[in-house]
Amino acid sequence: MARVGAFVWEPSGVMTWSDQLFRLLDAAPGSLAPSHHTLLDHVHPDDQARLQDTLFDALGHDPIGHTEARALVAGQLRQWLFRTEVVRSTEGSVRHALCTIVELPRVGDKETAERLAHELSNQLTVVLTNATALLTDVGPSPALTDIVDAGHRATEVLHRLRVFATGFPSHAVPVDDPRAWPQLRGRRALVVEDDERVRAATVRLLQRAGMLVAHYPGPEEAAAVTDEAHDVVVCDVEMPCGGGRRVLEERRARWPDERFVFVTGDRHPPRWLDEHVMLAKPFAPGLLLQALAEAVGSISAGS
Image 1 (tube, one colour):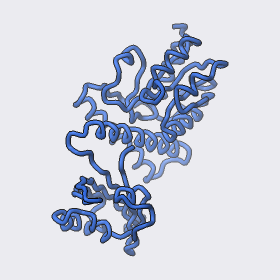
Image 2 (cartoon, helix red, strand yellow):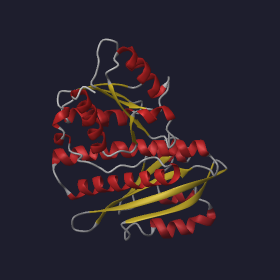
Image 3 (cartoon, one colour):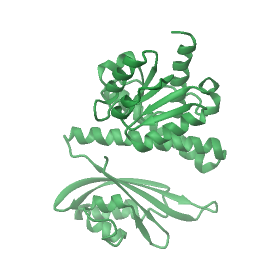
């Protein structure tokens, strides 16, 4: 799990910290008085003035700010990335500022970097899928439109970085609205995903497209279901207890006609996936809907 914290700063000076921010400081939630002075006390002395100038002093002026700073926590030197966004009312006054703090992995800590990338992919998938659903249900609004647009841009940036680093494929984004895919209505889908929020967002998306959805948190639960086949299985790759490959092998042994769509945040997906439909997290909802439509289309075609 990525070490990420956040705080909200009101114009009155009141600051609210997330529980994760307390944990970044190796403190129990609620055990410290939230303030920017308390936070600065944990920043390396050489970085305090710069952080004050580029982050805290800019909160009422700059719409978005970001900087890095070294932190001293429990005698250890850590690297933090700060990103702050100012939220304004329709009249232009500052309502509050939201700051996210990401603890960057140590140089050479490849395993930690991989975990951070995977967690970021999962969370962006949740944000983009749910925001797109709200945009469809509630209707256009400047805030929701900005969130969805930013989600698409962030997704594209991550995919471009993936292509640059590994050659992992990127995709054009089709229509996100589940109602635009009538061929999915009434089809049976199985979702296997160990991240609860990603699983919930995926299930909601498929249900909104009219699919009949069952879902399980891992390979063992999915393998235990022996009395029902599905038209298509949406399956994460990296999971405990054998992961997506176990789901594929055990379900194909019972129902060889089930179609699979795999999703993964792994920058180096295993070679066995080369023979299957695969989407890289974070993915736009339209990409998953398109892959599912193509899968059920192949069933209709008898292939």
